[in-house]
Amino acid sequence: MKITDILDNKKLSLSFEVFPPKSDTAFDSVKNATEEIAKLSPSFMSVTYGAGGGTSAYTLKIAENIDKKYGVPTVAHLTCVSSTKETVRSKIEEIKASGIQNIMALRGDLTPELEKTDRTKWAYKNAIDLIYDIKSIDDNFCIGGACYPEIHPESENQTEDIRHLKEKVDAGCSFLTTQMFFDNNLLYNFLYKIRQAGITVPVIPGIMPITNANQVDRAVKLSSSFVPQRFKSLVDKFGHSPEAMKQAGIAYATDQIIDLFANGITNVHIYTMNKPEVAEAIKNNLSDILGKL
Ligand code: FAD
Image 1: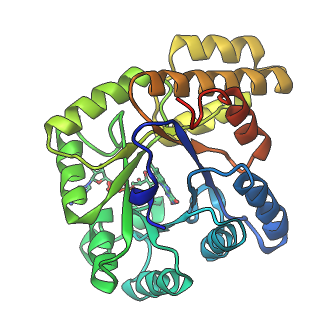
Image 2: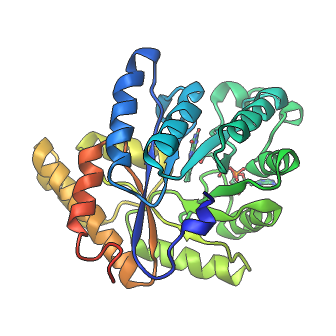
């Protein structure tokens, strides 16, 4: 099923992101975790590609399993910047053969090794190049793209970033998912600007529940997200206690989601970090709101 056919315009619905195993030996435990998450009946699930150290070979296996065994529509992520045309095209063909209809088309992060090489020789420079390839193989895929309420770290300014985002959407993105953010006002401001720029596709905010203190530094480094004082105080107070930090992080993420819904946003994507208990706790916190109002 295509993501654009699933998105709810009235009621709050949650979707979940998971990542593939880092090694063959971790496959079963990751598969189990993603199955527990699928049992929570999210509107859809996305499976990252190589991000967070996951093995790209398993993205499709995990996505197919969720889709076929639990009937949860899935999005297979795909990155392109460090790959050859042949590799990427064969991945697209594999996704097509699996019956999965949704691809998150991503450039991928630039590694220091890649940055040392001649850019003009790269098979793919940006996500837009991947989108063209996907469409040339099958115009029927539902393609998602990434967007950055706080600007992509490589962009000089937001105007440039939004100009490239508009090009990406015009090339064939049917929906966008945002980078994590901890201050909803940044998202509202971003949404206003992209709508002004003529980007009309659905934008699904990505919420990262921070459930341990170490995750804060890692997440912020990766995303360059602004950390509000309110959130810093919470980490200062509870960071030393894993249980308390988890509860506080889940409460903070829940609060963000409630505020998003109160401000008219109905589809929210949760970066679960493969933690079923976190996804479940958020779902339970919203039990009188989810799908009801
Ligand atoms: P692009 O859209 O190519 O943008 C990258 C930069 O280039 C931006 O600064 C943009 O403004 C600029 N740009 C875009 N188009 C052009 C152009 N035509 N000319 C010049 N400049 C241009 N990484 C993984 O490895 N695996 C994953 O599964 C994964 N999933 C993600 C999911 C989400 C929701 C998000 C937000 C990120 C994800 N990432 C993942 C991280 C992502 O790969 C990085 O953020 C990467 O640095 C940029 O990817 P992109 O697709 O946004 O790139």
